[in-house]
Image 1 (cartoon, rainbow, N blue to C red):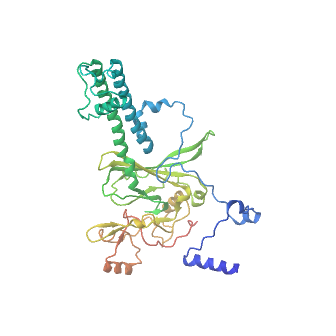
Image 2 (spheres, rainbow, N blue to C red):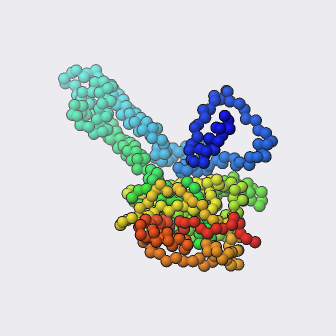
Image 3 (tube, one colour):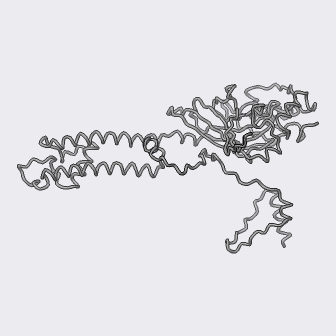
Length: 440
């Protein structure tokens, strides 16, 4: 019976059927897992889960503890109020107005009490400071009417009360300051550009493969809105622990990853999804890193996309990160851009999709040395110093095609179903066979 269930499970895995989930026992009924020496010999040692420095949604996973100088937050009170959570901001917004109205209502009631307006309110020949103010509730209502400039016409200040006139001026000035600050905080909080970053997408994975005879680290970015990001720029940081020659340990050392700063390729025209490429050269931290070495490394790549929101003119920033387990060697991104009748269409269903491609497992340094000596093999046109160029129409053909697939290209011309790369440089079909490593 157990053998039949095992065969059924294997059959389901082959045809892509998800096997039925087994109900978990309660925690107190589960048996403790006892590790054996045989288990250690069979299973490979897995990497420990690494703590992210920056989350996928861009939030920095850093907590500031033991801050002694808390007065610094009050010195920039406006920014502190803007940075608060919404529920706390609404609570403070309501509390400030209520306290302000109560405070000045108490002062109006105190003036009426000292002058005796509450005692002589029924006398016809008595001139009070504020007409029809006979209790604390009426003083509170008069305070609200004064600060919000609601002219009901029932309670009004008289000219026989100089202290009331002074209090009226003070409340009008302070009320304007409170309105400007609180309404300004709410307006800035509502129009914060960080909400614009929610429609900026980063690919789930980063890939490493050969592009134009050079090893490159690549990831994809896209914008879901029709309103563009003006002056968009992108940069990347490599975060990993490092020990200096003097023995100093730096837990989260930050190293710049050049993704086109010297050539201007970091300035993006983000209308359609783009593949951002980092050339692994002599200045790259991955220059001498092979595939086996990268599998042992522990690092994180933080990507930062900045620009101005076209609708508001405010600067926004979107962030994401890739752990070492999310950087895949020997893959490329699936094309998402296609030419339709009169326009280009982006298929975001394939935005995160990748496909495997032939890539040497050696380091970029070794690959560059071999390419300087000459072509590795005659049939490896991908890695030859002078790759073959194929003639194609720039509007109908946005991706390079294998020269052996001419019949398929002819069929695609007849059907009109052409696909294109987002950056027009990576190949969408399978590459020629390539060994895992470079030949000696």
